[in-house]
Every structure is written in C-alpha cells, then in structure tokens.
View 1 (tube, rainbow, N blue to C red):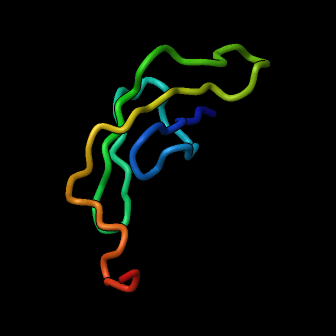
View 2 (view 1 turned 90 degrees about the vertical axis):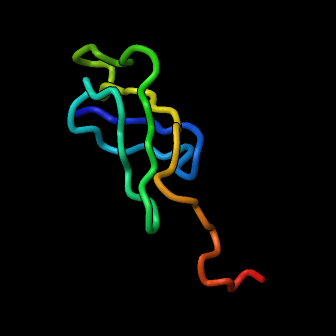
Length: 75
C-alpha cells in the first residue's frame, strides 16, 4: 500500500490512497472541478517494516475557479 500526502490548495493536509507510488502527478476531484498536485521528492517508508510507502504531492492548479460559497449562503 502507498499513500499520497497532499500539501497546499483546498486539500491541504489530506492523505489519500495511492494506486501507484511511481505517479508524478495526481488529478483529484474537488467540488465541481478538479485540482492538480505534483509529486516532489523521493518516496518515504520504502522498507518492508516501516509503514506504508509515502509520497509528497504539492498543489499546482485547479481546473476551474474554486468558489467556497457557490450558492451564496455565506453572505
């Protein structure tokens, strides 16, 4: 098992399962759009007894504008 630790953007701090630790980028659904994260650095915890393999991914962009209040209820 491998996990992706997300940094920055709307999913900052989230940890998600990673199908393949060799991936260089992730496109993740968010609300009505998608956000793009790129991997930085080497994999962590690649040994057999040190936990799941972990990759660090950093926010690059959102496909569309991210509106945290799309229906206007916070006004």
